[in-house]
Structure formats: C-alpha cells, structure tokens
Image 1 (spheres, rainbow, N blue to C red):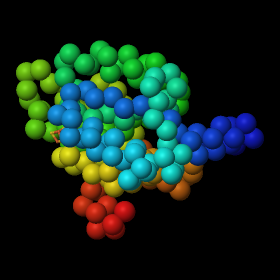
Image 2 (cartoon, rainbow, N blue to C red; image 1 turned 90 degrees about the vertical axis):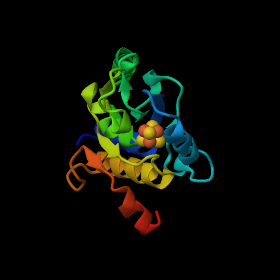
Image 3 (spheres, helix red, strand yellow; image 1 turned 30 degrees about the horizontal axis):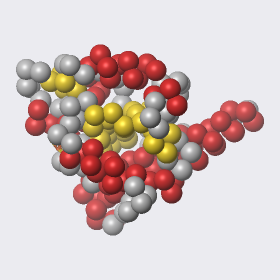
Image 4 (cartoon, rainbow, N blue to C red; image 1 turned 180 degrees about the horizontal axis):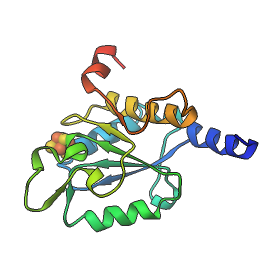
Length: 164
Ligand code: SF4
C-alpha cells in the first residue's frame, strides 16, 4: 500500500464521519443512535463525528425499514457520499424490514435499495451494539486481511454478555 493510501486509510479509520438517516423507523432506534453518539456512550471517543451532509460522510447509519416514499431519497443520499462509503443497518427493521416487512408501503430492509456493510439487529438496537458494530467496521477498514469479511453482522446478545 502506498504512503498516500496508508495516510488516507489511517485518517478515515481514526476519524470517520457519519450521517444518520431514518428510512421509516418508529424512532426508538433513532433515540439509541443519539444515545450512542452523546456523552453517556460516547462513540466520539473512537473519533466518530456526526455530520449534517452526505457529501462529508464516510458512513451512513440507517434506521428503519425502507418505505416506498423514502426509497428514492435513500438512493440519492447514498449517491451523494464520496467513495469509499459504508452503510450500517441499525435495528431489525433496517436489517430485514422487521415487523413492517410485507406492509404495502414498505420495500424491505436497507439492502433492498443500497449495499450494506454491517448489520446490527435489535428492537430497539442497544447503544453497546451500535458501538460494537461501528468499531468492528473500522477494524475491517484498517486491516482488511485480518478482519471479518464485509458485511459484518453483530450479535446483540453477545455484546451484552461481554458487557461492552
Ligand atoms: S427495530 Fe424496533 S425500535 Fe427499531 S425502528 Fe424497527 S420497530 Fe422501531
């Protein structure tokens, strides 16, 4: 890996910028995402910073099933992010459509519209699981050879057992 590429990877892993997008969630997963970013759980200690525009973000944090109304907006937000970009599906609805799967106005999970790099199930998902997922995703960016292949799936029960 060339020096410039190493530097870019180093800076991306040390300070990934994220954007949060609700594609139809009931808001419970969103509250947990906010909790994980604010001081109690403090995702910022890993250098993660919340941004307000997809053009500045490396990672798209999605919550909720994809409703038919939001589908084109999700695609637009994803296309506005620069490469390389990563998508994290947060909550069971984002992973698979969850309890809303099969509704006339729901397309399904996030991966029915855009590629997903990490799945973090839970209803609602817990901040510990969100942090575990983001840290594992960063680990795989840092050292792709040693890390699990994308997409990653987080086991929320395992996270709680570890007391992460
Ligand atoms: S996974 Fe549960 S908490 Fe999260 S958006 Fe779906 S229904 Fe709401």
